[in-house]
Length: 78
Image 1 (cartoon, rainbow, N blue to C red):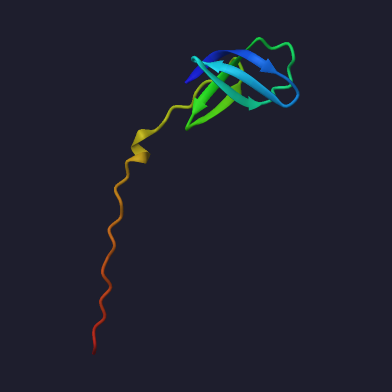
Image 2 (image 1 turned 90 degrees about the vertical axis):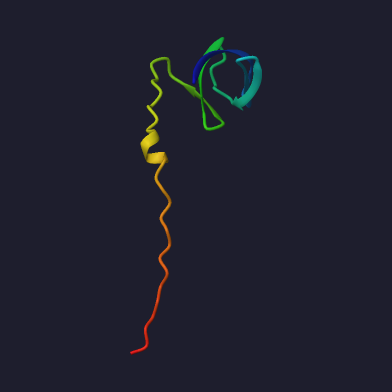
């Protein structure tokens, strides 16, 4: 989910943003004049993205593959 977040703190080391009511610390964005940034939250990671960034569509069909069953190996004495 991409949200436009307010930058609370921004210095040379870290940036703190307000993501939906939660303060999140991310690496510095090196833009001292930024008041807002677009942040993409995916798989537990926060990423600053460009204004024209579009989230990739998730393909759920590939995630639901059935597990392979193990075959029992047999040997015969001839």
